Amino acid sequence: MDDWNSPEFVVHFSRVYGAPPGDILERLAPLELKPWDRFIDFGCGNGSSLALAGRQAGLAVGVDASERQLKLARESLSGLPQVKLIDSAFLDFSWEDDPFTKAMSRRALHHLSDAEKALFFKKAHDWLAPGSLFLIEDAIFDFDRDELPLSMPKVLAEAQAYYGADWRKKRPELERCLRDEYPSGFPQWEKALACGCFKIVERQQKTCFYGTILAKREKW
Ligand SMILES: C[S@@+](CC[C@H](N)C(=O)[O-])C[C@H]1O[C@@H](n2cnc3c(N)ncnc32)[C@H](O)[C@@H]1O
Image (tube, rainbow, N blue to C red):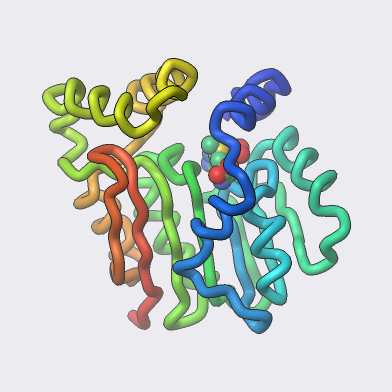
């Protein structure tokens, strides 16, 4: 987490991984946000998704534990009264207001171990209304995490093809994420989601190491 409070790292990350608004709209599309939706973004970073979600949903809440990221988000979202920012670690978050109807998390939940992911989704069950959708875009392997050392050559070859000309810039972060953080295999994500009674309705693998999951919050 410390990196997310380093000004240099935050600027560097936004430069390397920032996405144009068109890409963000496409990213949000599966949620089909409507004015009556109450939306939450876990690990909202500098608020790039909130800036667009906040124009589509009636309420858009961003949660992040980095003061530095939240400061950037606050600056860029100051004209949107329906957007609220909350400084909290995922596992410390609490919400007493009406439940959310749509949620997302992009490139953030891999900071939690598998056991922490399970606990997070268990808690998220109470923050989200029955039938609500949760969109996750993250490091999701199409193989079991234990197979990572064996799959490494395949991961690096696919990453190079996927990132193309940006591969040299992106390689250090990807390697660090694979080495030091908690990307999980699809079976581990599915298991963690099930702890909160989230059922997978759609899944897309962009590469063997990265993808999206759209899950629905069901009743216990
Ligand atoms: C890679 S950035 C992604 C930001 C944004 N979702 C995006 O797509 O640009 C990950 C974000 O997750 C936040 N984060 C990481 N671990 C966290 C935790 N345990 N609790 C809350 N926020 C966390 C970081 O501060 C950072 O802003």
